[in-house]
Length: 266
Image (cartoon, rainbow, N blue to C red; front, side, top):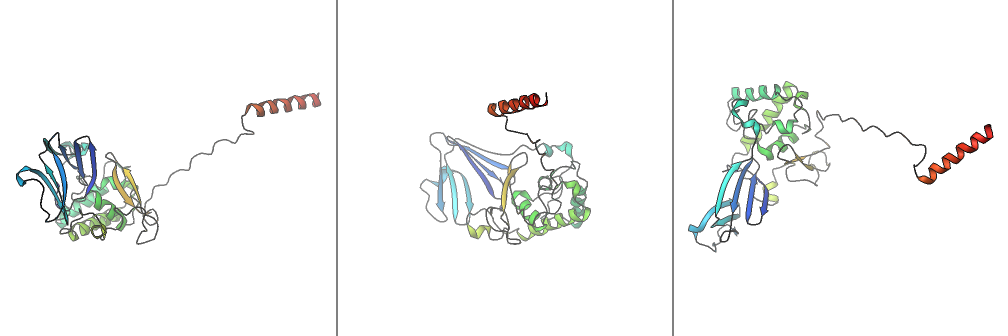
């Protein structure tokens, strides 16, 4: 199951099947069949079914979601090919890493094998650093004013050090914080995550959100101030200009004009 402080990013339903996806890739799947049900209660509110029928409870400040009598309950992590042991040992968790382990995370980022990989995706690779997750990658990149689409090869060693240090500070500062609750009070410490359409606190541009990567995770960023190492995109080639709209009437007009020129010259 996800650790305390992880954010629920997605809830999908298909009939009586329900999947809840956390920002670290953990998925909770329940199949309710005939007797199962999800209930939502305020903290301290009496449940409408007996406790021994509870199968799953998800609690956040002020609320608890309870699943009763589900026929099937399972958790799994989204498939990620880079988690295979063939990719090497996982990196240290930055929330409790030593100085030497933090330095190794910097080295792994700087020497990342896929040079064209966007830094937003590199931050989720647990062979570079662990503990970041989807919420924090948006916040880290905003703090460093880095474009989330910057190719990792464009970052200098100092840039990589800045990113890892920012991640370390953010994770350790928020060890006791819980971002699972909904509402403004839960998002007060977040600069861009969940704030799409609002003004950036740093430059007043509008925060945007996109689905990126293999799993199309939500990525929040400010296009106004997160411009460091922003990749250059070649403008599309202009189509060749046409002398006239290829309408049948225009074709006939051009043909008639050519005949007139030929008769005059003859």
